[in-house]
Length: 193
Image 1 (cartoon, helix red, strand yellow):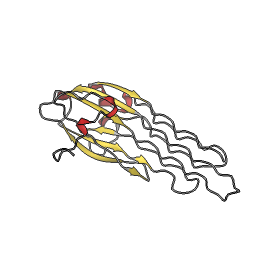
Image 2: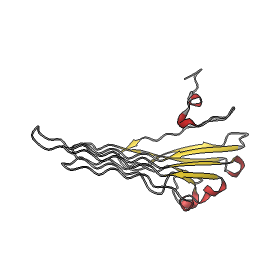
Image 3: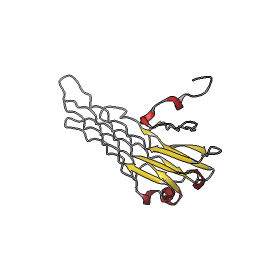
Image 4: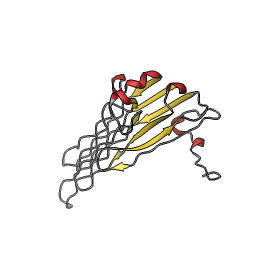
């Protein structure tokens, strides 16, 4: 904290340049034992002319390793997939004064021997509270959630699936600005023992 204010404006997060006088707002999710999101309200800054949004889905949790006695075969759990990403840039006057931000919660890792990780949830920017209906969405981070990694086995555990790429059909209102989408990355398969 600097003079009692959050200093995230000073960070070079993801290498994005921050223009002089820009208002930066960050919304974060939590880690959950089931897919879901954390909801916030975004208010358009007074006098804003342009809005840039970086929307990222949450990653899936990694699978737990397979435990056993010293002479037993064991194996590592697989990694969870990462969430997909969307960038949006548009004129501020095209947006309503307030939007609902639904930040995807990250998936928990496997809780016990050989347990799978939980999927991570997508993130949404919507004009209606708690709505994930395409007709109400300005943005959605991807078309599907990032998968959790499989729990460890004596063979290689299956990696968590990547968050899939968003399309204009998944967020109908995205066309009021310029946007680009990127698929997430799959996790890494678990090792064998």
